[in-house]
Structures are given as structure tokens and as C-alpha cells.
Image 1 (cartoon, rainbow, N blue to C red):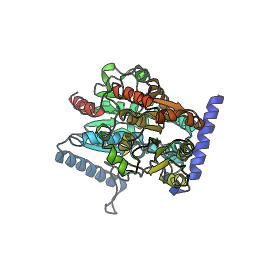
Image 2 (image 1 turned 90 degrees about the horizontal axis):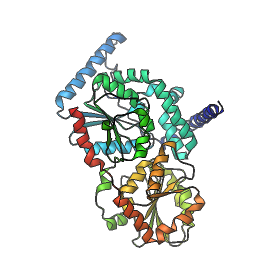
Image 3 (image 1 turned 120 degrees about the vertical axis):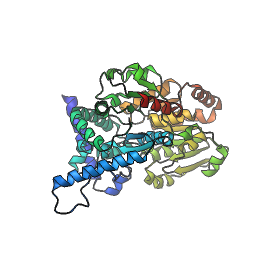
Image 4 (image 1 turned 30 degrees about the vertical axis):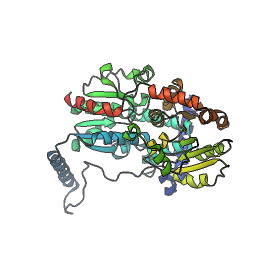
Length: 457
């Protein structure tokens, strides 16, 4: 009882803080991506004669929407793939972008924010704030602020919320697909896959879940003993620790597919390091320390830069701010000692390039940035100074157990950990060799054959 009460207090406190910050729209929009304003397949009531009743307007609008979808299908020879994604953090968007890149040439691909554009009525926070602040906004704000305890409780609330409303979710989804049913549905998000599986089975629509967490337990919420043959579930690596997290769903082994982590093509292409260093004003003969806290960024980034400037050895620091570009002013005020140089980069699509010229990376424990570093053969120092999110604990332990990363528990430990990467090339080369030799599938090689197989089911 006490644990439940404390959890509720944490959630109420987080909600109160968010409501206070929501009064400043400028502050909130620094932590979230612009929302899509188009809702595909939805009937509207515009351009009707004023003497028509609401019921007649609804019938006409539904007929128009159906005619538009039929016309669209007739005009397109490509099979249609719908991807349900989210703006919570940056991982779901990165996976969606990777899928679009690999599939767009042969399929008609559409990405929809499922939480904002499909099941928004389930969003308690959006309802309480009359749409001013959404659950994704709260998630992003806590992520940037490093409120990990709050995020862990919020995720628990998400599982409960969507599982307890699964019947309502199924009705909402059936209504949505009434006007816009694709040839294949892909979900890259957690919480809603139980309802999506039930609806896909009812509509005989192939359904694929592409996970971007090593711990995919939130992705199987609501799924139990699936018998639908047109359903597949992906994992990044063929590892018992990853399979254990979805064991409770009892998904048949033949429906679990090892695809590799969904990285963008940029991480698989050769690099001209000299040209990249010139582009970003990086000196040739200095070790490079990259600070990258994901697409959402982190308020802790300036503190990392301050600690790095107190380490008495020459280095070049590359700071990637993600969407949190307002931190640039604070970082530029930091005095750099002799021998230390700095490059500050805002939101960029050249993360793969920056990793290719770095010696070591200080990054969060999320699987996205960790797998990007793994593919770039870049040794990692994981930021664990404020603990580790529940669903990122497996990715942190996975990378550490294979010798690719080590956890940073305190900022004061950084001056003791970092020098061995910058001074000892033998140690760094050994780590890079482990990363290069680690067996893994490449997503770009596995995803399209999997899609083709699902169309044949």
C-alpha cells in the first residue's frame, strides 16, 4: 500500500510540474517535436450546405473518405505500409526513419503518431489539460531533465492504462482502419500492441512489431499466447537475455525474428574521416571525446563539458545537443583550458560521421545510441549518474558484459575512467576489435525479405 501511495505521489508531482511549465509554450516546444496536423482517413464536416443535419453530414463525409481511399488504392501499384510511431524520446522516430529509408523505393510508406493521431482519447494528461500537454510531452520533459524515477513510474502507469482500456482501444482502432487499412501494419511503439494484434487478426491484416529496446517487455503488454499467423515480432540480437524479457507473452519461436538493430544506412557506409574533421573543425592529432545524449538531449550536458575541461590532458570535445539547442549558450560560456578545443553541434543527421572520428563517446544507456556506437566501433562510457531507466537496464548490462561500455556512476569518476581511452591506444584498439568482431545481423539485409514473407502469409 505504501509503495502504491508513493508511486501516486510521484506521478501527481510530475503532473503538477508539467502543468506549471505548460504555461510557457516556448519552454514546452523546446522539448517536443512539431505535431502532425493532418489526420489521414478521418472524415470532416467542412464544405457542407448549412441546411444539412449532422447525421447527413457524417454520412456524406464518410462516403467521401471511402471514395478517396478507393481512388488512392487504384492509383497506387505499390503495397501500402503504415508505421505507428511516437515522438516520445527520439528512438521511435529514428527507427521509423530507418524503415522509411529501406522500404520507400518498393512500398508506399506512411508514418503516423499513434498516441496523438489515433488513440489520443486514452491520453489522461491530454484530457486533463484540454490537449495543451500530452503524455509524450511529459515523457520528453522528464527525459531531458533526467527524472528517471518519475519516468519509471510513468511507464508502469502506461502499461496499466492501455491494458485496462484494451477493449476501448480496439474499438478506436477498428474505426480508424475502417477508413485507412494498409496492406501491412508496423508498430515501433510499446503499450498498444496487444490491441493492435487483436484488431489485425480481426481484419486479417499482417502485423509486425519492430522493437527498439533490448527489454521489450512493454512491447508485449496485452499479448498472450498469440495464434495469429500473420504476426511477427523482431529482436535486435539472438541473445537469451532479450528473449527472456518477452517470455511471458508466449510468442511462438517461429514468429520471433532476429533482424539486427534498425540503424540508418549512414552507419553502414565508409567514411572520409579527414573530410569530416575538416567540416566540423576537429584537429587532426587530438583524441576526440563525443558527448551525445540522444535526439532529445539532456540538461546534464553542460556539466559533462565542465568536468571534461578539468581533466589535464589535450582533447577535442564534440557536443551533440539534439533538440535541446538552447544549451549551446551555457556551453559556450565554459572556459576551455589550454590544449582543449570544442565543437558544439545542434540537431543533426550526421551522428554517424561524428562517431566515425571520435575516440570515445559519453552517452546515455539507451539501445539506439549504444547500437549506433557499436556499429561505429566506438567505445562507450554510459551515463548512469542519475540511475538507469528500467527498460534501458538490459541494454546497459548487455554492452558492459561484452566489454563495449562501462557505467559512469558519478561525475567525479570521469577523470579516472577517461584517460585510459585517450592515452592507451592498445586498450582502445582492443575494445574496438571486440566491437568489430561481435556477430550481428544487419537490419538493411533482413527487413525487406521479412516484409515480403509477411505479404505471402
